[in-house]
Every structure is written in C-alpha cells, then in structure tokens.
Image 1 (cartoon, rainbow, N blue to C red):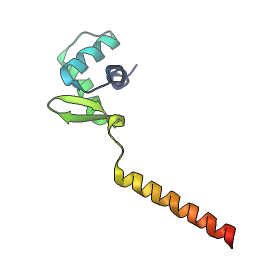
Image 2: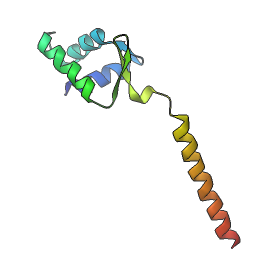
Image 3: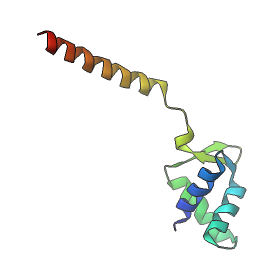
Length: 94
C-alpha cells in the first residue's frame, strides 16, 4: 500500500482534519513502519503532491472532498440544466 493511500484511509476513518504529526504517526502505524525522519518526510511530501489532500492551516490536513461545493460551480450547472430544459421545450413546441 502506498503511503498516500494509507494517509487517505486514516483521514477518512477519522472523519475530520488532523494534526500532521498525528496523521503521520497513524499512517506509519497502518503501514507497520516505525517513525523515522526520512519516512515521515516522504509521507509529508506525498500529502503535498496528492490532490486528494488539502492543508487547512495550523498543521491541520484534511481531504478536499470534505470542502463544500462551490456555489458558483453549482449555479453554472443549474444554469446549464435550465438551458437544456428550455431547448427541449422549444423543440417540443416547434
């Protein structure tokens, strides 16, 4: 198992943001590895490079999927759907 996949599982199980040190400790435990500076640094690097994770400030890491959906994007999606419905009505009438 990759370290970033293990970290993802840890955060998913925890259900909320975690302090990076706790996240590293639990990720290493899942992988069955002792905490060594080089291993911890690799996992931290993997977190930074994996788009599933997001740094939330104050040493807290979470998952991007926990972020609320952007209202602008939802409004655009709804607008597109409304346009499609209008086109369908116009075709039915025409």
